[in-house]
Image 1 (cartoon, rainbow, N blue to C red):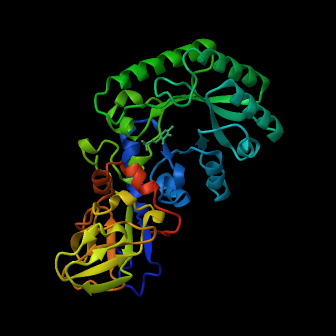
Image 2 (image 1 turned 180 degrees about the vertical axis):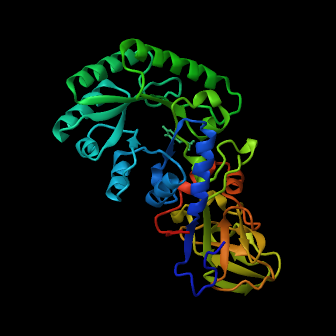
Image 3 (image 1 turned 45 degrees about the vertical axis):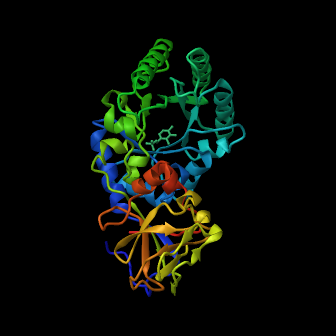
Length: 381
Ligand SMILES: *Cc1c(COP(=O)(O)O)cnc(C)c1O
């Protein structure tokens, strides 16, 4: 790692270092595992907390063909940054800036006729057809048309396609349990997807140029049948395993979260630490104050729980995680102000990984990395 490590070079109390070469490598690995399917890099939620625009560029450099976002505004942010690759936005309530999206060549997902209508109207105003990916709910129970409503959605899209305001660019769905190896619902959903595509074929809404896609990271890496024409991995792009019990799949974590010790001091045995005195020193020791807290995405639940790397050694958080800070007990180690504490990273230098944080906190890595707050600058390598 060639990140700055001495206090003189580091200019913020804490930062999230993002290794863009890891993003590129992970994209290349996913492209290979996609086995001929197109690779859509999912960069929603500010690139899973890594910074959407730099991550999108790195993913494209690594071989991603397309980008995926949840919100239309996320896609427009990519366009405003000069990213020209195809982008799909897939979570669209009423009243979104669809005219601007169509004008900027953002592809849009729709799982209900009202939304296809709204998109077509926006396309009319923009003066160009909108590229639409029609969503079928094959059993995730979130967005998308039910099998019963699917033909009506296709019919509406076909009518608008005939009118010239809409182009059917994709047929897609999302899996509920791809991260649970062997879960029977995966095959059930894929069968339902095949059936829905069959209906679309009969109606003339499928065929060459219409992308079929359903695979998230877990399915991309573990369910070959789910690849179809395109895969949409997110978490794996950031080097975090979508199925931790099956290992790391050769992915490399891109984010290292570091902070500089704000204050170090000797205290006697019996010293209560932080709100509620949930930690009390059992001997004379050094306490080090770390300037990150729950406002920065360090879960309050990490109180007396999560570990960090300080002075080359693992140390558990001592006492309550506060809004801006927490404390670690470093014993007699000569830790001092300005020294670097690594909360999590790649794991190659004995630092905890985001996976370890997730495991010790009863959550998933997605929540750890997307939760890192806006006060923490992202620094790129
Ligand atoms: C977030 C998301 C993905 C990516 O999921 P991962 O589990 O991070 O790979 C793919 N498709 C849709 C529709 C999503 O919302």
